[in-house]
Length: 586
Image 1 (cartoon, rainbow, N blue to C red):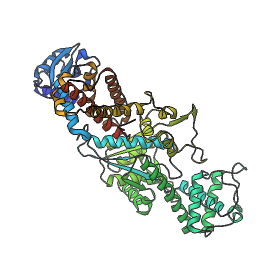
Image 2 (image 1 turned 45 degrees about the vertical axis):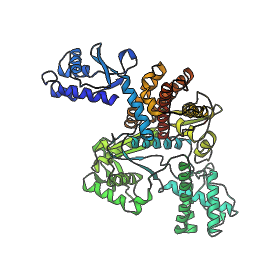
Image 3 (image 1 turned 180 degrees about the vertical axis):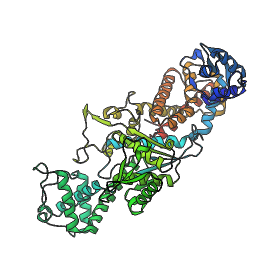
């Protein structure tokens, strides 16, 4: 509906003479909003007031000219000018009736559009370091990213979902040596675990798997492993120095080839668990991209050479630097240190270039809020490699706090004292987890109330929305029990009989759905869809409580059933985009 009015206003503006509205003044966008008061119509536009200053005309006179130039439309009952120049549009009931017919006809595809015109957009999300199971904060990234991708797909974009596996660097070495130590414990060795190691129970299982695969082949006596190492914390030593020495000792004792096998076995086990966890959560990826592949494929050297060739890299004090200050960064960034070792940033550069070479027209990253400092330098890389800055987008996720029984749960991957995503899903269910995670905007802190998520009450939004869907199915079952049938065509022909306030409200709410999906995609706002579905469910519950659906008048009965089915379709379609089921019974 809103799109129709925007089109009519555009045609009216194009029809106005240049002496009234010069071409230079017509660049303002056309905005149409839902009215809050039915007395002011269904939609309103402030186009005349936005044109007035640049056109040097009276806004109300401009509004009159625009209204006079509006093309005729069967969907518009009347148009009024209000206040200083607002243009208020009143729709015919028939326009809403046609929309109900469209909902029933389109079914599962209702709300989808081609606004994205098939533009290729890549969304990289979750990308948690493979150093342990996913915890509840990762769950928010997963739910938000998956929902956003679904919305973009519904809005006509070609979406590729990607998980970046951080399988290179020091943290993976710490992970590998931690696994080997768990393996040694399984072999019967006893020792104090390093303070900077990963002590979670999940590595005990990985150690068991390693033992099952190689037996005692990699066993070395604890006395040889820890002999001569610097002290650890809290025994007067440095935990980082200690763990690095322990990593070097492991490589020395079992050899680099065996060490790499331990590392790969650990990564395979943990990444496999992450894949399974996410799949059970309804979150899948088109590509699992390995950071290590950037090194093995020569992609890092390729990207560095590109920066050097374009003049965006330079040598200073024996190190290679990226001239990121040329693109708004606060300082230049080291790519290769003076000792010849590449920085982590070198991998970031190669990854951006890899994405550009894969032909994506837009790159969206979903990061934790603590990564905000990386945005400017990554955007600088993209520009330096020839990509326009508008192709680069970072959405920051604020933290999520989990509450159970009023107490805040702790999360520390290194200590193993945290609640996993799998634990959360097991306790509250996938549906509640998916919807609760996206109830608030990504840039807002989220307090996840587990008791509310598990409750079967109207205060629980997932229960409230699903219950509206189930209620429609219940009405259809009641219809069958009474030996009656539903004739959708007769219902559409009888929609004019639906004049109750609750019915008119449902007409309007349903008709807003297609444009809302486009808005949610463009604004990266899955939470707006949650609020819409909650409002739609409330409208339906109010209607259900106030009126009987199965009435004697067959036309009115079928019309009410059509309206109920249209409501159910929209709820089901919206919940699907959020990764939430739509049950027929509760």
